[in-house]
Length: 361
Ligand code: UD1
Ligand code: UDP
Picture 1 (cartoon, protein in one colour):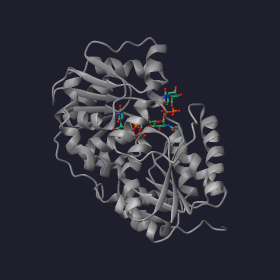
Picture 2: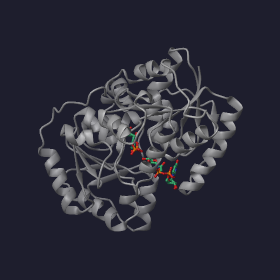
Picture 3: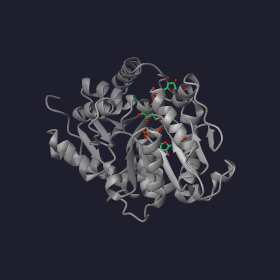
Picture 4: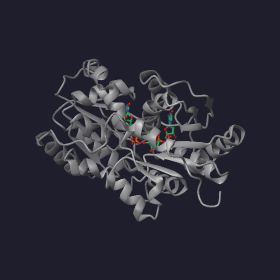
């Protein structure tokens, strides 16, 4: 079997890390294409090094742009690649613009699409990722779901159940394969904070960064958190902090985006995590660290149900109350089913059962 695996942005790299060696071990020829959606070393190269991901076979250099420009450019270049390479199927992961571009380009020329992390839904069509998830899933021949609720969402949308496989959460496999080494790094000491005595923050969603009032409230809440805060800042957030003239100094240590192992290490040692990231909500749940999610909704509802996570709106009062609740909350919740280190093995099993083309092809 010949596959092309599409990855382009930070969370994609973490999802393909356990997948690539599992495919190779199963004798599947899987070539990796990097769309270039993320290109800074701190958003791309560091993950290849930290996670020992093989060098991509193809680099497309798509870069930044509006949604249509980025997705369209990636589609054009991916189509050329798929036509030339004629893979048996294309694997896309997660919900970024590169995911959608890979699914659209492949489906239009009859190359079956396999979607890893299918079926997550926030119900919020103002999120670009929700649009990407919905369209990608409708175009996919094989849907690999991380949770039972994802399987239910797909059934409710009329997806043929024989195409859906509950493989579990590949993010968990990455965590479990790396947590031991990450923990011993004690990255927090490099940022001048003590284990157990700081809060880790990541904020990059447009609903928080692109509304100055929201970004300002988030920073104010972090400044008043009562503990030092380590805040690795995504380039989108950095630009918005600067343009809105918001200063995050004092107890908040703003730092460049960190690599995966440092990020896991920081999560292991944090008293709580404040985020709007999808992946970080999951990792905090797996690592046993209480999480405060600054969003109206989440497609990772299982983390709320587990008792690991709570949603708060972007106001100082709501975030402050969320932090207090998180710090006081009991730990030791149950990690969701199949968030384990066998997810890539289940993906290989599903692929071995065959990827049926969509109707008409
Ligand atoms: C994208 C994903 C989002 C994911 C996030 C992870 C979509 C729609 N969004 O959002 O789901 O959570 O990645 O980090 O795909 N930039 C740089 N260097 C880079 C890449 C981007 O400076 O290497 C800057 C550019 O100014 C760019 C902006 O960040 O315009 C946004 O990048 P983009 O990939 O469009 O979206 P993200 O906000 O990163
Ligand atoms: N991450 C990282 N360094 C950072 C911020 C995040 O390694 O400075 C990791 C994080 O641990 C998780 C992934 O990036 O594995 C989540 O990606 P992101 O938040 O960019 O996207 P999302 O999951 O929201 O799509």
